[in-house]
Length: 76
Image 1: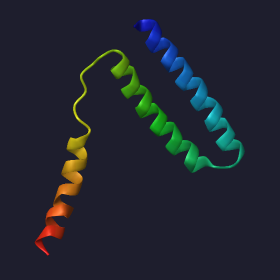
Image 2: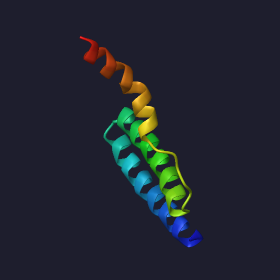
Image 3: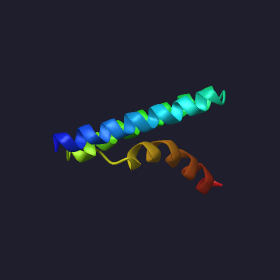
């Protein structure tokens, strides 16, 4: 399992590095920063999933954010 995690992280780092460099060559600094952030979060989550760590549901943050809007729309 440790080798799987190492291979996964190596692939993600190399792929991210190549993509970010190509974005920076085309003067897309904001896109490169957003891509780097997304890839960092996905690498962390992917590593935890490969290690079979139970992660909490991703629905809870969305429910907290969007539930008040839904209630507001239903009250109209």
